[in-house]
Amino acid sequence: MSNSNRVINIISNRNYESRNTKIKLIDILEEEGFVPTEEYNPNAELNICIGGDGAFLRSIHKHKFPNIPFIGINTGHLGFFQEISPTNMKDFVDRYANKEYTVEEIHLVEANVCTKKKCFTLTGINEIVIKGIKSKVVHLTMYINSNHLQKFCGDGIIISTPVGSTAYNFSSGGSIIYPTLQSLQVTPLSPISSKAYRSLPTSIVIPGELPIQIKPEFRYENSILIVNDGMEFRYDDIEEIVLKISDKKVYKINLSKNVYWENLKSKFL
Ligand code: NAP
Image (cartoon, rainbow, N blue to C red; front, side, top):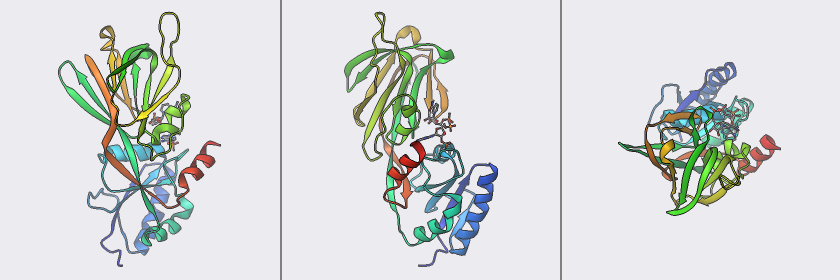
């Protein structure tokens, strides 16, 4: 099959190695007859993201969670999302042209934030964190599927997706969750457990469709900071935040069927 109408978006961060990698990748793709473009084309068949995990997350947000699948080339620090290195791009392009890959669905977390005036929706790839502004302790009431669970006091709560479980969640003592498990993980950040307050000290993993409802205590409704994949959001007069697995998904190309375990071992052990 001719590759001449097969447009591929190249999304790169600006560091020196990424820029060099991008030039080499464009040459390889053109030699194979693909049409690489740096100007984002919404009708392309593939998004190739050059950088680290941060660049991967930013490109998904910037392009509003497109249906076009992503694959990453790692020029960043950790590169947990990336399978390809700048030295094996030719092999990747050959295997892609021969359809030697599978497509993985990435589950996302969605937060519906309601203030006294309006509701807003946020979608996260790794996690949505509910914290206090100015390093304040947060005071939150938490319900799972309408069941009151706890009055949480501490630095905050991470609501992590399976793919985000190896990020902030993992550094905060949460478990690593296999990406196909449609679940969310609620991980406390420095929970206070004393005679004054009692918060769960460990993570809870719950089915993704069960809503997690979080209400700031009324005196603290203006002290909440929401951090979505590292980006901060502040809203006045928050009444409640309801989180669940999003109906939206993004897609990632995997060349090796063992990529998850290979990445986990090589990047964390
Ligand atoms: P960042 O510098 O872009 O990322 C911090 C580190 O997390 C980087 O080493 C990054 O890899 C790695 N990372 C990102 N997603 C990952 C994933 N799914 N699995 C494993 N590692 C992953 O930081 P940022 O801009 O503030 O926020 C981006 C992400 O950083 C957030 O979504 C959050 O998960 C994470 N974060 C972690 C901590 C912590 O561990 N204490 C604190 C704040 C935020 P690269 O080096 O390849 O970019």
